[in-house]
Length: 141
Length: 346
Image (cartoon, rainbow over all chains, first blue to last red; front, side, top):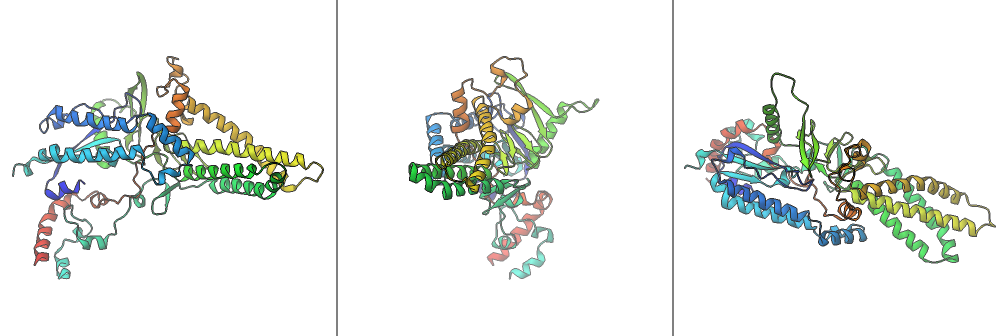
């Protein structure tokens, strides 16, 4: 999915990479820090960026939500000796697909025009959101 | 035509595939490799990455062997007698329990326990930079720990030198598998794998169903011997009795211990280290992850959402990641690729 951006500008050099770390104040659930990194100040609006991270946090919270759906899924899996996962997609996996689509959308609409690229956290083991900053020269052409 | 172009290409470019041009020639020279083939931890993979197991499979064959042999003897020698004298449900229950035990065991052994992939070089460099800037140069750099607040409680995160990142809370590095595992419980040699966030529920259902199975077989064998009290005792029956007797105590004990852990949302690792027990007893032994309700803790641990595997075993290694030190030659590549394009069009 990220190939399309790099195909468009094969000569864009990577100026820097910023890593948004995880926020553990609420436990081990997957949440990212919404603090705006200083390196992005010149590239993107603070509110826009925080909105993206907040939306991602909401999507991850929904994936890990402990509700009746996850319990039913868990009990069903246990009763079928966990063979149900061979044919059914888990709620978490469905949410991850949604998240991937959201990131792709954000990249296409907001970040690519500003020379930035968000990497899906799942590709970094849900540890960080990697923001690649491309050099400005290729944008001014 | 293509042979002429090879002489023009920089020999270094042969090992570096350009980001934008994915030609068929590159694919023929380098078969795209799956990520499990370049996995840095000490694990073994089967079925093209679908099955993961620790390098030292430990005693897993023995575990499987014991279970299969004991159940085999049970079905062969006790069931015919008990079906005749009691009920047909005995082998049926035994069969269901046996299937449950073996499935749980295989699931525990072959599932990724929650391995955290190692930090990419960029990430590691970023973290190093942050550590260096916060420390002073006048005294020895402080040990690599970071303190954070979780549910108003201070928790120390340690830096993992192998994986080059700060370990998330409840994560521990298993030296046998050489991986950081999330919600690390312990490395179980009987199962031949680490027990962590993703396979703890399988491990728990394995030991619970095994407790039921051994108790059931023990009970049936005792019944069999009692009903046959006028006949000479069968050597095989005695053998099964001995195996069941010794395993029952250890398995029941283990099940009880893990039930306690599940109810208080603790891991074996935390319990052994006494991470939360010696804290000032603020909220319920100071465990910041506990929901302070036994039922909620059980539901969360056993029936919570199933997190995905983070190591993506069957994904393909992207060509630019395969060669980390390619940045210098990347700049030289564009002139060559444009030349190739022109020639290929013509």
